[in-house]
Length: 422
Image 1 (cartoon, rainbow, N blue to C red):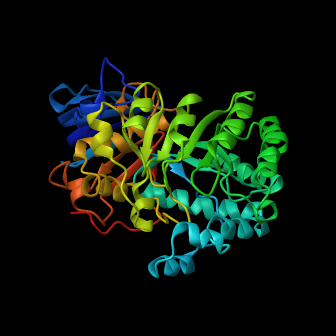
Image 2: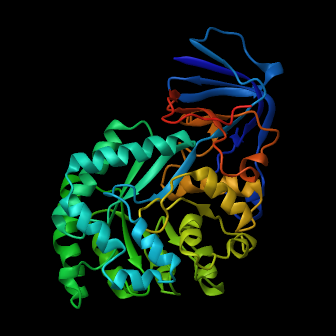
C-alpha cells in the first residue's frame, strides 16, 4: 500500500544519508526537521520524504492532508513491566504516609504483592490486561515496547509471563522485545536463602526459557536490598551461555555496583541511575551501554533525580522510558515522560525527543529499524494535533497531542477520544 501525507508543518527527526544508531552528548540537541514537508509510506516502511515543492506525482491508495500539523517518529518505550494483574493503589497511600520503597517491600508489598496476584492469574487474564495497556500506550504515540517478566518469581510463573509476552508479540502491531527478569525480587519461600534462588534462576529458569526461545534479554535488579553485584554477575555469566543479552536495573536505591557489572557484560542498557557519579559515568563512556532514566518512577516515588545533564555534558547518550508498572510508575504515557525530561531533568525539547525515540530504540536493540524517520525504516509515526511548535509537545503537558498514529504504516484506531484537536 502506498500512502502520502502532505502539507506537514514539520517532519521531525529525519535521517538521510547518515544513519545514527544513537545520539550522544551535545548532538542530542540536534534534530533534523523538514519544514512544509511530504512523507510517503509504502508497504509498511518510509519510502520518501522532503519539501512539498519536491513532492513527486504518483498514485496513492491513501492521501492524508496534515494541514499544518507535525509528524514525528513513534516513541520507543524501552523499559516496562506491563504484564501484571490488578493494581496497587493501597501501597500508593502507604507512600503518601511516608513509607519507603524498601519498607513497603519488607511488609510484603511491592513486587511480592504483584507476584502473589500473578501466580493466581491465568495467561488469558494477563494477556487481555496487557493488551489493553499496549493499546493505551499506542494512543499516546508509542510504537515499540520492551516488556519484562519478574512478577512470577518461580519457574512456572516466569514462563507464564514470557509466554504472554510471546503472544503479545504475535498479536500486537507494535514492536515488542521480551526481557527475563526472574531476579526482580527474592520470593517469600527463598527469603534468607537468596543464593539458592539465584541457583534456581541459573539452573532451572534460564535453561527452560532458552529452550522455548522466550527472552530477547535478561535483567537483574542489582540494587540495595535486592541482588548483589556478585549474584548479578553469576546470572549474567550464565545467560551469556545461552546468547541472551543483558539489561540491568541499576543504582535506583544506592550506588549499588550495577552500572559496573552491566558494563562488564556489555549490557544493552543500565536503567534507573538515580545514584550515579563520576566513576560510573566514566565506566559508561568506555562502553556501548545506554544509560536509561525512568522519570515516572522517580516522580511517583519522590526520589532523587538522575544527573542527566552531567551525563550529556560528559558526552554520553541518554534514553528515557516509562517504567510502566503497578507499583512505582503506573503510566505508559510517553508524552508525559517527554515533559518530565524537560521540566525535571532540564533536557531541551530536542534532547528529550531523541531520548524517547532513537536512544530508546537503541536500548531495545532496534535503532537500525525504529526511532527516526528514514527511508527503509519501519513506518511508525504519529501526526500531532494542530500545535504551534515542536517545543509545545513537552510544554503543554497532560493532554494527548496525537491526532493520528501509525504503526507499520497502518493507522492505529485509538481506544479513547482525543479532545485536544484544534
